[in-house]
Amino acid sequence: MSFLLDLPMLIAAGVLIERRLPAEQRDAAEAATLGTFLSVSFGLYHNVPGLGLLWRPFRSRDGRDFMWNSGVLAIDTTELSWPMHAAAGGIFGTYPCFIKLGRRLGRRR
Image (cartoon, rainbow, N blue to C red; front, side):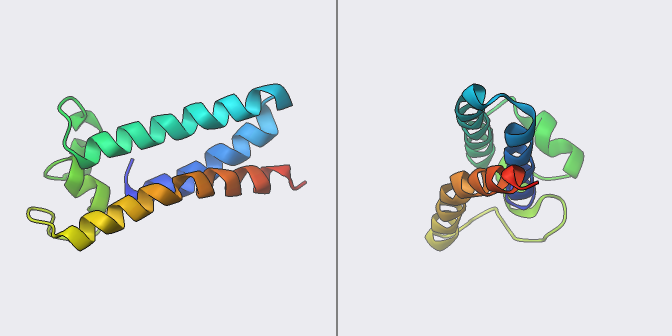
């Protein structure tokens, strides 16, 4: 779960929800998926203990480093200023839009 990986995975999850689940289960599955993504990603961003199994394979320093860099970028996350934290909050705010986009794509045949 990182900013680079979460958004395409949320779109894919929305497509799968729309195409694989009965209509009466879709909203609950969307809420559960979104809740999982937000809680794990927020936990990673705040370096909650026990989530190392998610960031260590990417050779990140910690969860926040993984959220920003995903083992690909080189943003220094040791001392982020408030605009970067505000940007992270804005990105978290887009998560519902991406799962909705996936569901909309999943309704197309």
